[in-house]
Image (cartoon, rainbow, N blue to C red; front, side):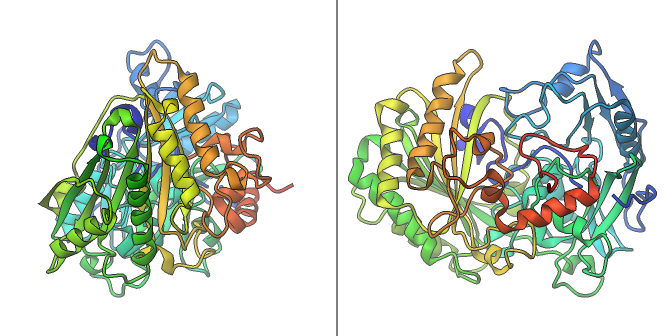
Length: 539
């Protein structure tokens, strides 16, 4: 449903799941391990390809990012299809002293890949296999696989799925590393809550390069490497070349019972209120109702766990405010739940919404691709433990309806969260935010040729004003709980924009950051893998 807002705002990005740029993790380097598995093995490898400026393929490989604000100019792009080829590519770049970045789906919001300082891009898009690995009794997924294809193969093969993003064209590679959430997360948790193991190409302090597998097993000497992948963000420790997924509570070896069962069908719905029918009182009531509903209905095991929605609060230019989402419509009572939800959000709002819904098979909903050309945009994010205060809602109304936002394509999305996500301890994975009920995503988008300045200023002022009581950022506390690393925002590291005194890494990782730093020191001691918001080695 990414087509329900303007292309310039969404920019084809994974706003219902999130994705940072690269693979993760590195040290105690093991010898490269073969990719073959006893299950349905991946397709035969093709030879690696090196594409440099002047090659007709170069523009296509360097303009793959979803945010057209950033275009890289690396010395070359190495297109790889096996772990061994990744090892060779990293070894060559390290030997030559060239800075490395990694791309799978290309949905990073900032310039972590498309940075002038990046000299080598390792393109993982050919690594797209999805298969059952009988030896590990888990599903193997390579980083270049797109979510829609992962859903298709898991569903057609075994009737199962993983709770991940609702944008089918997002690559697994970066999506999982920040946590991975989507329409089924309220019922089943995060992608990383099902991460069984991970294979990573790493570099030790002597510059030796190899691959290592790290697992969920606490007795595994590489266990910390696995933990770093459960929300530690991309581009920090090495290059992920394979993920394995399995429900930690599952028993046996029947693959049809090792991941959550996919719904038989889902109901896609929307309710849209015209801006011309919303005065400030009605707008306030609408946003307040929506937040209050999520406070009441986001506990683990809630009867509403199968409902996922986004309240799209758009500038007046868009013409409307829209509530859109998906509901697991398997079993009785789904229509009643949906009607009650829309009624609760619209309670005491005189304006009546235009409504529609459609029940569709699971695979049709999960695999729908909404490709769009890259556009220029800026996105910022926050976790909400409770609904916005009335002061914050006043700010939201002012910025979306007032003259400052006139003529701009901008939005604030309030995205359903909580449920099963909040059954996991904050230190059990690197995802520290485990008691929120909503995510907030602030966006401005524009076309090529339009001035970046006013649009960047608008979304930055919008964000700072909402969090004016905590230094312009969502400091963890009673109402907010920091930000989401898969929607990276370099403004959080800018002292002029973040006046809270709380560092960017606390906003993303909270108390888990020191452990991530220790893992960084062990597995990437030479700091080969870094970007503007990467984990810093401890001093």
